[in-house]
Image 1 (spheres, rainbow, N blue to C red):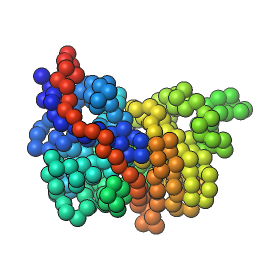
Image 2: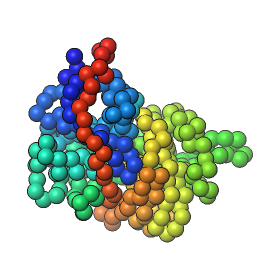
Image 3: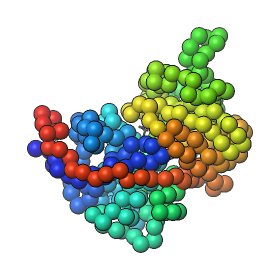
Image 4: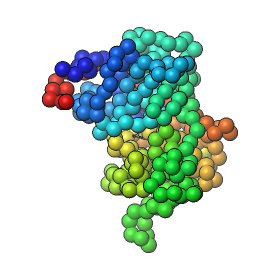
Length: 295
Ligand SMILES: N[C@@H](CCC[C@H](N)C(=O)O)C(=O)O
């Protein structure tokens, strides 16, 4: 039987992004892709991202996070999930309290992120510096200018979408700026075509961004490995960085997503800060039957 059977989890969301948090500290359990897909397939534990909290690897950090998408793939970043983990580690009585300060340093495969509580259910995550070089995204081809890369879909002389800005926030993002309301695009159809485009060797998160004011962006996201979601924190960061590089906005904006609003600031020291809410929905234990027949 899977070591995950009957493990406790928290069902949360961050601005609508469905997050499951599991505390695996003190164990050597590592979630396999098949187990992640099984957990995502149960309505009680369905998620956009599963945040598995492991013992710290690097001295001075509070935990190591493995981040799983619904298809079982892993990501180096999840802004909304990181806020949920911070809430769980600071407030959930079953998860040991590592700090009284309301601050945590967490590590992922992409590096370190720090989180600070700003209100009871609101956190700011320092997402670190954006990667802007073509090989940091990564892209297949060496584009010198990543503010707008050559990529389009639809008729060659009248493309539906074209010339996205590309940014790594620890995970790959392509941001298409649109003049029309992003809701008027069939992102559920367009998203998968672009996510798996050969220009993105590690696939990409695909966003449609409409700049609606000097400090406001409306955003919809097709997430790599998870599909349409109500919010994506790293995509909101990428959208602000991409828009700012094109002088469409300044260095900060409220990013309005279908599930809520995130405030993003690209600081002068190059760090991107994301502030937003968390919500705890329920806690439960994983049903053993989920793992029957998995290897
Ligand atoms: N929802 C997340 C990002 C999730 C990871 C993404 N699907 C990927 O594979 O890169 C967020 O809030 O940042």
